[in-house]
Image (cartoon, rainbow, N blue to C red; front, side, top):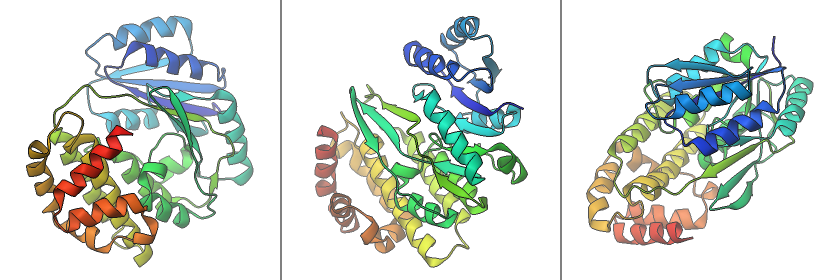
Length: 324
């Protein structure tokens, strides 16, 4: 059995970030299993992977028909043989030394799931995103739902493979946005022991988008994911239910910044789309019932404007955020 399996889904990736990602994980050594799931790439990605495989003989490339990121990660879970599982996106980086230290912590704590701080790089500027030291799966679940943009990504975490398999924990193949958070809700509902990892092992890169179009498919997947999470937490205590409404609100803000009013989209172009989102019952309930104490002041201002149908105020706030 390998110490750990690193699962990297790829689809039509830029060559430079992909090479950087694979060169970093290669430094992990022979006790680690590296699975790259090529989810039906139609560009130069397969050629880049063949080139990298010559440099990294232990690299395993699994090519399949396009199923989406959830299907690619599921294929990796099925093929994994390591004691631990780590997910990495093809344009990000894992720190080999930090990962090895974190695996020792997982062993010492007998944990099913480990989370931690991570680095974010935007336009060449590095920022450390810190997380709280929480002690139970319920605490992590509550905090993740309140702050999915800080806790809700599947990468930067460590999972016990046997725990995933015994509990049949896989990604919802119908989701391609916010699928991370929906998966982690189910992970935390089953986890017996969780721990905060001591080392920053993951660097997340944010690249500017050149598209000025509203991605309707992305919005559809966001809404489907929120409905799935709603079903996941249907029988959870009231505190978790309220935290779920925060999750809806944060994802609403993400939809506005990254999709509805993305750079290049005018207020009049995005307004009909936002009107449709705000008419949905789940979003209306979230705007009424979210936990204000768990929401930052700037976000509360935007959410209040949305609740009161002051859409131009919300649009102006989005543009201020994008300009930072």
